[in-house]
Image (cartoon, rainbow, N blue to C red; front, side, top):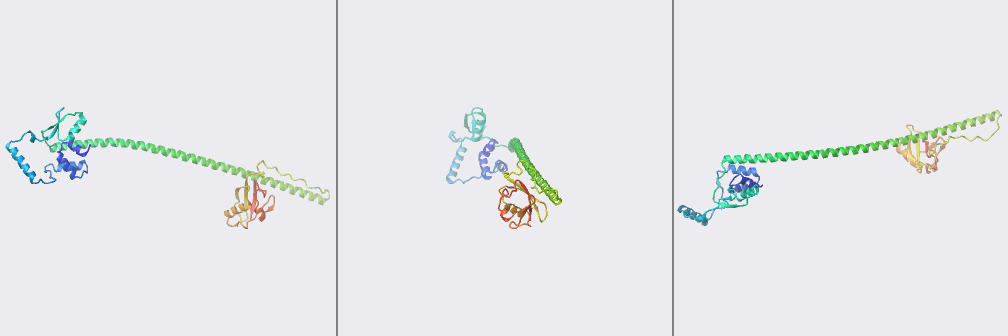
Length: 322
């Protein structure tokens, strides 16, 4: 319902309603109603003053009325009457509103003039309208509260889903890290076992050599070719030259903790040198040299260009960097 229709339903004069809406620049129902109440006793200003011909016509009508010479054609319809229920309405808009609510469709013009509302009636109408607005706002507030509650529930559910996904991702990452550590630990154990077996074989070889030399000096033994050194057979997959990874432990001549890392077996010792130089500034990739204890060997610059597999360092080895 428009502001004009609301004011018409309250019983205000249509001309004064138009004046109020125009004066308040259609800024709303409340400003228009305030204007109507404040200017209820003031005359409605004329938009354009009547010209001389209009004044003559008015004078003629006044004279006709004073003389009693008024016929039916001079009567002016002042209201609209419902033929079905007899209610009288001030304007067409009010009549249309009544027809919409009641379903009545029989109306006629009437010369009955509807008296303007008194101040008490206007205040009562205003109070009634304000009460209706308050009820409407309260109902809308309930709807808004319900919508806000539903939106909050959706937001919380979305947050819970995000948290669960994040926890699952973190659990998978921790599991992946644990598996990586387990593999590294297993490789380290295998490398240590291979080194220990090599040390034991070297000890046996030195002991047998010392025994042969002692027997020769005593003249009690004959010179026989040295017995083959029994070397502990590494477990499957440890010393295989086909292993794609080589785990190296590099001990530094400058001191500090040994460096440990797994390299692809087709990497060269130059790659290892670059890694050592990046880990410790005391080493230069062009001057660093490597040596191994078992077997005892110092790797030349030509060896540096060979792969770890070609240098016999697969699957694991211990190097000294200097």
